[in-house]
Amino acid sequence: ETTIGVLALQGAFIEHIQHLELAVNSSAYDSIDFDFIEVRTETELSRCDGLIIPGGESTSISLIAQRTNLLEPLMRFVKDEKPIWGTCAGLIFLSKQIINGKPGQAILGGMDIQVERNAFGRQLDSFKVDLDFSGFTSNKVDAFPTIFIRAPVISKILAHKGQQERDVINSRNDYINNSKVEVLYKLENGLIVAVRQGNKLGTSFHPELSHDCRFHKWFIDEFVLKSQSTV
Ligand code: GLN
Image 1: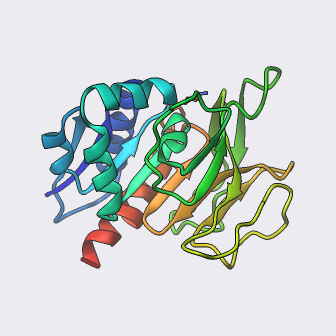
Image 2 (image 1 turned 135 degrees about the horizontal axis):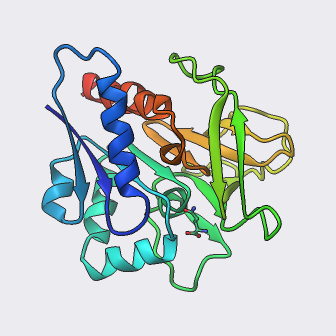
């Protein structure tokens, strides 16, 4: 059995569970049993082969994680190199540095990235745009509807163990050679909104709020099942 958890402290966790269910129901996974669970305790987290951290409000998520003693177990989950996908507030929580964070806002440090909270400002608080992800997925995720709500952007790719740090805003390099972080999607204005680092995925937008479950299927196939098969 493959268990994927969705951190259910705050935010859009129900929608993620629904999309995971849709993703496996619409595909033929003959020999795999899936279990999708809401995660609020260390015991629930320990059952998970992969984890999604949803959008919502990153300061609330980290505060509740601290108060419920889930921060340490989540940090161990990161250290154990388990597959994790952070969307929006979840991306902020998964990062290593924050711009515009609240003082003392705890983060997991699971990806070598700096994230700027609320980076689109007031006028562009929320918007919806179709993005073409067919370049890097095997599932042909083209014209994928993405929804941004007071979204963060990835403002910097950080050094991985002693390598040189690089500011990637407005950079035209799509792959940052001296980092473990791969830029998956950059908007036309140069802002980075999707990154991957090994079996960790970070998106500024909310695939769980669209009517499309292909991104969830890609996370299951490419991140969770692949990392299980290499263990
Ligand atoms: N602005 C929110 C935060 O800083 C994130 C918004 C979202 O998840 N849609 O946590």
